[in-house]
Image 1 (cartoon, rainbow, N blue to C red):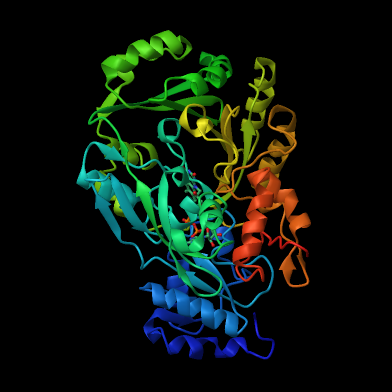
Image 2 (image 1 turned 90 degrees about the vertical axis):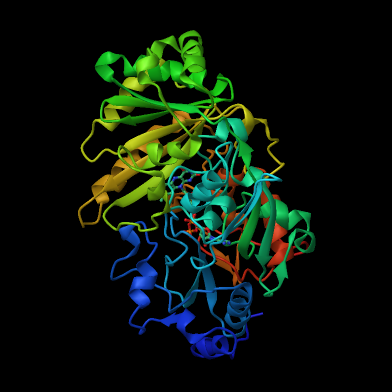
Length: 498
Ligand code: FDA
């Protein structure tokens, strides 16, 4: 319970009993800004008017995290948790409205321990995906981990909200491969899976970051891959038939063998098909000829490599090395606004010209289409909080970006218009969205009586979680009934009888 007479001003003193002072930064500390900015990915949330934390705590062990929670509750200071800082709305380090809060930045808690004997790993939340992938690649060329493409993403936020990349059809989400987790809850208790109970453990694997406490580390299942895999990248312009190929891709890609992932990036007037195949070029070419001849793929498109080499290939581009995936530096050059959809019925050929027309407008961004099917779709909807399973053909990520300073209003208008335009073509009742592609346009919490409202939260919660929203709210009611851990899109507590 937050004591009403306690003052936030006493928070640092409370911390000083348990945390070395060099791990706590106040706004007046010389390095406050550099610590704050260290993992900010989107300069939209680093402006003079951004609501910033009053303190940043950078724990180096679990007891520091526990102390931050205990002191935060005692002195009326809410905590926002940051692992990799990649949140699309910056909610791990900024608030939409004025608020006194501290950031617990987990970037110093980033150990990765691989056990090749059991094909498992323990990874701390502050590690990046690149650090995890690198450690897996060092341990074996026959093991991998299925998660997102961008190596600077933090494990903590990513696993909390699902996490998918090029292995999603073969092995599902990152969170589908979590075997155990260590959590600091709103009472400051350190809980393993047995202590937190099965409902909380269910919620942590896809129910979204911030809501249930601070996850310190995760045990994951590593997955087998062959020593040689094949990638290709094939651009097709509208003039070369991109609209026909995309129309066909919608039915083909989700039904391919699970070893084959082909996504489509739509930008300007072309579609680029990017693929990872868990096998050799010799084996891939006949599959492509039989299943997707419209793409015209042949041997000259193949590049064979190890799985770990595919990580820089997909995200960092030509010339990048495996060592580059360890680089944690993020740049503040690109402003972004994202949102997402799910498609359950293929969009008819005659709708594609107007979609490509939107991509030809001034200030247009791009659309990334990730195929589902196979493993990701085989998990029952209620088995984990992530509900976008059987029947989903593909996920759409809408990306709007701009480089120069400025308000980006033309770019955000473009993405909002496109989102409105796409409504008849995508899932409905609810219109589904992916939590890790967070968008505050979908709705924000309304706080009633110092607790986020369950009913008001349905507007965004059911888009991300569908029928699992209610169970998530009940779990929140069990583990954090006072709604201490909250942000603009955290799960509201549903407490029986209230
Ligand atoms: P960040 O630290 O900002 O946290 C995100 C949320 O989780 C916040 O609400 C935060 O409070 C909370 N949180 C963080 N750590 C926590 C912890 N230890 N315990 C509890 N709560 C915690 N996604 C995807 O699935 N596939 C992809 O390929 C990509 N690609 C991609 C590229 C780029 C450039 C960006 C910016 C983002 C993506 N994403 C993605 C989305 C990404 O998965 C999503 O933003 C993750 O939540 C980021 O996790 P971080 O830890 O980096 O974020």
